[in-house]
Image (cartoon, rainbow, N blue to C red; front, side, top):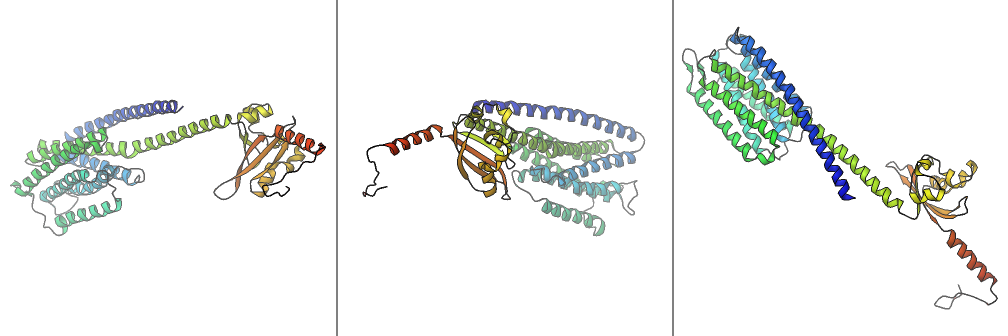
Length: 427
């Protein structure tokens, strides 16, 4: 029987895994179509003006990053993957810095008295935060993180970065008009590239701690970020083609983040919860079938009823005793089996059990002349109320008749008979 149950569970697991794979393929096709449409639309805008291209692609990337954060933050009770939870929070603050970078971009003129240096400083700060966040993932694997602490730390780091650029301008210059990028900017970008490579190596080293598909998504994010950073290193002015390519790679990085969180922060946990629920349901059905099998082979008559007297379950021996099938008995009132009519209900043993709340025992004579020894056991809920009664009956007809015959023989015997104990006392 155990082998058969395991086989059923394996078949169900195969069905479940197949359902997930089918869903993932459908989602992947749908996401590809959306990304293709967005990229086509942005490419069309790029034909007219660089500023519009920059604003649209930056704001879409920021919106996707913030959406990913909202998904993670509102499902912290479900998301058990520390990497997904951490990276979702990190990209919310990366999005804040990128938003500041976007509205301070040359030609936007939303923030007064800013120049290309401020925009470049914000980009470097955002990229450094992104690289360090991706690297830190490898150090929190299989560890529990506290979301509010991560949120507080990133709030402090983000506030410090913005303050050192806008309020207390001590952040090193990254761009000089008519001279281009500074040495600090170039060195910082090289260091950021190295951090991306180290992050990729650390993830690969800990690949056994990830699901394969999640591992590939995170590696894809890292390498797209690396390519984006290389493109930013190669561009010479804000209207260089390498600058646009860098933003394209950055867009795909954020999109992979969103897809990873959607799949492993929402879809997979819900599917797993559903799988566990179905597993428990199958296990309960299996236990019930085994219970029925065991109890049906008992010679005692076993009947389970609710506190209203309605029969909920009956074993095969009891069915044979009353000459009815299980389907015909379940749902009937208990007194219909043993009591002659409605007026005798108060004399039924189960009524005594219901009133006393204790185990009651006694004998019942069935319509066909059998004598049953019955024990009725009350079953209580967590509030102490009787919800069900378990009745176990044993046929003592032959024993009772034998006792009566022996009693008759002894009472009519000519010879004197008595019983004494070991001390000679007459019993």
